[in-house]
Length: 291
Picture 1 (cartoon, rainbow, N blue to C red):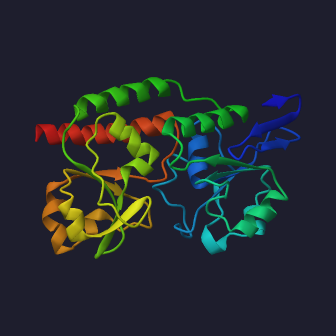
Picture 2: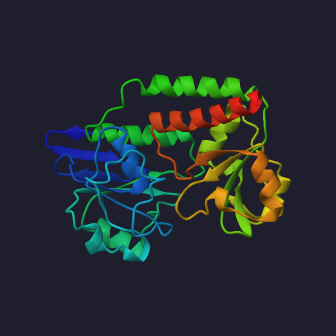
């Protein structure tokens, strides 16, 4: 909220974050920055996580104008001085629970908060996708942003299209993050807010066997093939091996038979981004039904 020349927002840690004026130079974790851009808020800078490299991961940046947004780097390259070089007046970070700023060393996060207001949005598995989206919308609107015209209608249409395409059944859908030519990570669908939405709309998501790993099960390619996917939601972040480069013989037949949908496990949390993803899944299901 804003009153007079001041600005404040209660973040997902329950902290009231305040500034003397409406922030205009926002530094954001890449997922948050790309989401805010969908509401018309252009961050002055973005930063990545330990999974990222010297260049921004295009799978995470959505439609951000990267020629106008300063990428600060990721992992060990991040320190307080690097993060503050654009003189941000607000930092927007994400958390996967417990309020810890994802992608930042705890000491770096502590020193950052001593110098600039920090808002944290919880994107963890305990949250529904709708709730995460609502929180980003509230933050964006407090900063002067607004939803894209027609975005809510497009999302509703995409949900209904996917519901019809799924038909309460359809091909088996497996979410994978290829790790190497020997192994992959198979997502446990109930742990991922965006995958839970697919299940709610009737998509036949397949869970890997019970065992170690809260969000992912580590499987070899024979085990991945045994899940018998008709469609694979393939992690397209830069830290994942491209699925079409996997040459494991145990996967060859399953991979040849399965359709593929690009999946970013750190999704943009805006209506138009959700609509795009649901549309891709619906298109794959429709193609499987017709083919």
